[in-house]
Amino acid sequence: MSEPTRIGDPQPLTLPSIRPSVTRRSVLGGALGGLLGTGLLSGCTTTPHRDGHGLGPTFGPPTPTSPAPGQRVVERTLTPQVATVDLGGPTVSTWVFGDTVPGPLIRATAGDFLRIRVDNQLPAPTTVHWHGIRLRNPADGVPGLTQDPIGQNASYTYEFTVPDPGTYWFHPHVGVQLDRGLYGALVVDDPREPGGYDAEWVVVIDDWLDGLGRTPDDVLAGLIAGGHTMGGMGGHSMGGHTMGGPGGMGGMGMDEQGMPAEGMGGDVTYPHFLINGRVPAAPSTFTAKPGQRVRIRVLNAASDTIFALALGGHRLTVTHSDGYAVVPHEIGALLIGMGERYDLVVTLGDGIFPLVAKPYGKAGQALALVRTGSGSAPGADALPAELDGPAMRARELVPAEASRLPAREADVTLPYHMAGGMGSYTWTINGAAYGENAPLLVSAGQRARLSITNQTMMAHPVHLHGHTFAVTGSGLRKDTLVVPPMGSTAIEFQADNPGRWMSHCHNTYHAEAGMMIELAYRT
Image (cartoon, rainbow, N blue to C red; front, side, top):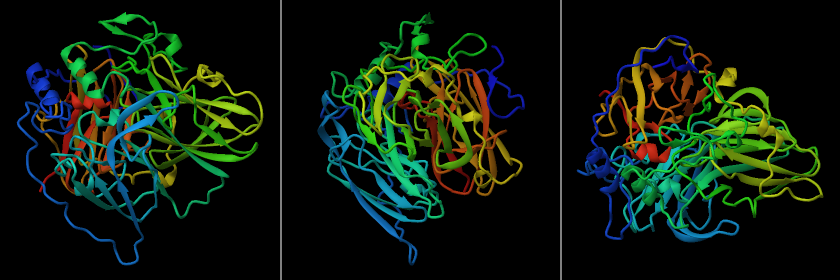
């Protein structure tokens, strides 16, 4: 095996031999064992036993909590349900929060107490996970780990404080429900922030297939059964996988071995890519005046697609990553993995400009328009010149001083070895799929380091629940980090939020096929 590409800790990391212990039968049982009488596949993503033996302990109602005296309370209701949605031409029956894709924007201020009632009208159990929020454990939305799933025609109320400002989002943590329309942005404002911009836009990028002849459950079943398909663009084949050709790279480039820098372009071919729920033929339009300064909050809600994002004719300044401030960094394009968020600031020119999210290694693109003046709108296939250049990766960013985790030696270093492949469609952490791998154990008060190695030919966005982490070396604060193929890094976090937490690859299909692990506090 060649030496992995280092993106974080400069110290050498030893790669053990990993032999997945999960049988094909156990993976099939875990992914397909949730068939309901309705004929819908809804196995819980976090089922502890991949052989279909159940969800583990029963949790009952969440531990009651109340806002502190004088604490502002933000109350909302989310209604996950089946609805018909117009994507700007394609009209699909899908699962949504309310009746729109994305779901309703939830807005709060750092320090607010959120009380969100979820009224489940879906034909299957569900939950809501509050991605990136350092919240209390019972509100994290992981069935079998922090709560019972919310049954059909049942309700559940999440109560928690949002401690940190930033761009976050919410989505289910059950099966592959995320690859429908069940997601929305959660913006937490900073009362101390000076602003300095004239407008703010929320941009949500997604890959879409639901309601067009296949459901996400159909896709997962096909992947596990061996009928997988890669989203390529006429590239070369390697080991049965189609690699996206140069036309699908979107400025993302090759590594020193001539391989795509982010590995293969996902597992699933999608007919559409969306920005704010619209296809390129009928795009969302953002309006402003020439010379105005705009803050753009960008979220990748896709299940299987990394994107390169650019605004034609403009340079963008990155100000935040996953909610944390960075030293302002000017770019032409940026790479954004599943679950990641970036805040950008741009001074707008005069005209109509394409805002394009180009999927890595796949055909098609997502498009929105920025209109500040008159002129002809760019076509659905408009490709900004900025995507011909390099796309920024998280490792290029430097955290603002206020975002740095206080310096401290790690008390414990834990292995986090990702392996697997398309052949059996089993994806593992530390040698086994979730439910068969041992939890990562920490004690309250420790500084913990995860030594992450990716032994696959695909990039994996690693997400840690309930905490934020610092990338060793740069100190960049995040909660989701793309680890490149055959790459390694280390991340550190303060073990200051006791409970049972999930960590996983944010490719929805990889997670459901086993690439998850529990992080547990010793009691």
